[in-house]
Amino acid sequence: MKTQIRKALIFFVAATMLLATLAGCSPSAAPEAPEAPADAPSQEPAAEPVRVALLLSGPITDQGWNASAYNGLMQIESDWGAEVAYSESVSQSDMEEVFRGYAESGFDVIFGHGFEFQDAALKVAEQYPETIFMLTSNTYFADPNVGSVSDDGVMKGFLGGIVAAVISESGTVGFIGGMEIPPIRKGMNGFEAGAKYVNPDITVLTSFIGNFEDAGAAKEIALAMIDQGADVVMAQADSASLGAIEAVVERGIYGIGINGDQNSLAPDHIVTSAVANFPKAMSIMVGRIVDGSWVPSSNVMGLKEGVVDLAPYHGLESELTGEQKERIEQLKQEILDGKADSALAAAEPQ
Image (tube, rainbow, N blue to C red; front, side, top):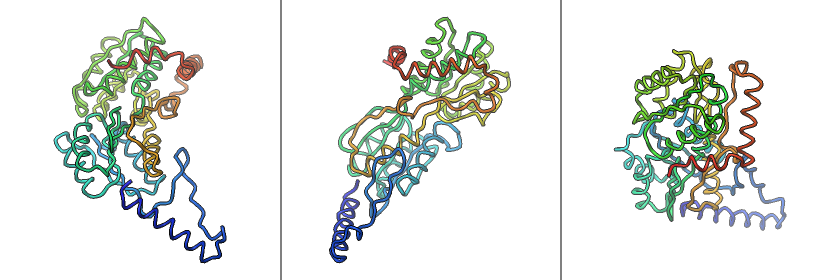
């Protein structure tokens, strides 16, 4: 944390000791420490709130990637009493300026939500060594003030792939990615690996859009996949994914969401979503910063950590047979037991 926060803590402790002395050194004179939030490290009371900012590549209303980080910011506000701010739909040309603006305004922690924020964050971090820059969907870290936190991207795709293979009747499924960058490649590789883990003979169609905004292109790609026999499609393309979901609805097939629970976007077609509990992961990181245990490092969290999982089936639960639901749970347990480790490792981009 910044120097002024450390000084404030020292002043608070000194003041507490003085009050205890004036009260005859009675232990009951010292105030009780507040209870730490669930799933977060213990927290010393701070004289002023930690200030946390968030940069997003898209809108907070996408019910997926950007919405998950916005929810994380809200959880940080709730868990740590933080003062928070965010900027959505930040273009690559504006990233440095927005990072610098928050750092200059005295924010203690700044998240760049997405692999594409790395270069801008590193440039600005050199100029503000007392501000902590956190990269998501990334494994990069550097002394003294750059760290990363990410859900297990391969695991997300893998979970989507096993569901697709279990429920597919045609033996053909599809995955649509946004930009061809490592985190999206991880999802695509994981999806194919998960589907083939269930059915080695399944056909997996894959394609990149080239961006995260062109919903029309995503729809065209999804329709082409459906024309080739795909009866389950998963799209990892931020707001562009909405186009793929439109195609799923129009053609009456099943879709699988990712990052957030996207069932509400097409309740009769989105069977489940490979969700990332980014709010939990982000709050854990800020908790470590608040209690002083944070060090520059890479933090990847998956099914075992409770950060990656499958969303409920909602109203489509009755559409799945008991055998299908049992098979999916069995496959999840195999992941937890380490039986799928080699398949997951092979799906990591080289």
